[in-house]
Length: 73
Image (cartoon, rainbow, N blue to C red):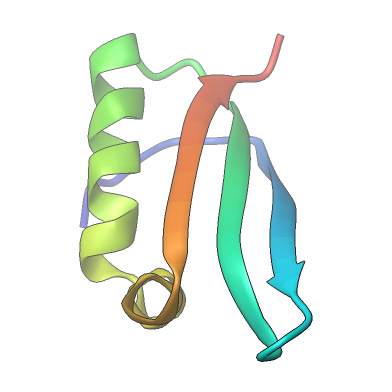
C-alpha cells in the first residue's frame, strides 16, 4: 500500500497481565525499522499499522495497545 522500503524490522512487546480475573491489561510495543525512508514516511507507516492490520485491530479491541516506531541506528 505504501511501497515502504526497508531492510529489516524488529518488534519488541511488553504485556501486563492481571491475575483476577485473568486477562491482559495492556500491551506496549516498539517497532524498530532499518530504512532510508524519511521521518515523515516512518510516521505514516506507524499511523497505518493500527488502521490496516488485523492483529493490532484485534488486540486494541480487547485491551490498551500503545507503542512507538523508530529508525534502527
